[in-house]
Image 1 (tube, rainbow, N blue to C red):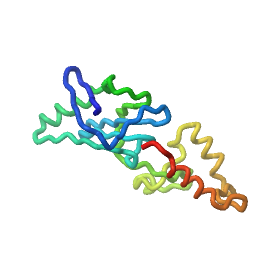
Image 2: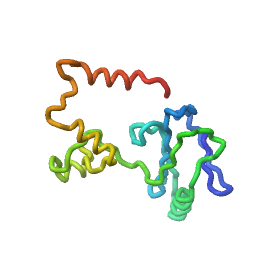
Image 3: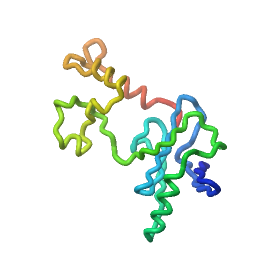
Image 4: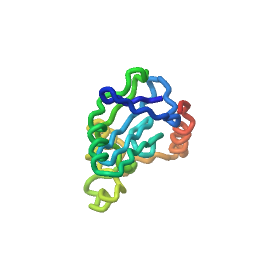
Length: 164
């Protein structure tokens, strides 16, 4: 049971899909989208693909929308009874899929970004930009003659992870 608190009001929802485990190697996130009236949560990297629950606030009249929006904007913490070391509350909501393919800016067209086809390398954090520059050369081949199944080994290691 996860509780989100606003002053004396408490919203309670059962989020059985999240299956929270207090493990320092597992990261959880809660995304609050006051504009679209949605609370979403998941584990791992904060992406639509890793969300495990989504709760939309229904509204019929504009005053309910404004009331819900104010409430969602006022949320600043998660109930301290939830004993999770690595839970992050995101005020910049997750609303679009982030592309998994990174490209250099000179290789992109406007539609590539508008359609979320590719992620410009400039969107990466500085440390990730360094990593990208290390492995993005035209001669950097993942499955070479020394390890022809390297990509399959990576996929297997991701798929066989225990946890949730």
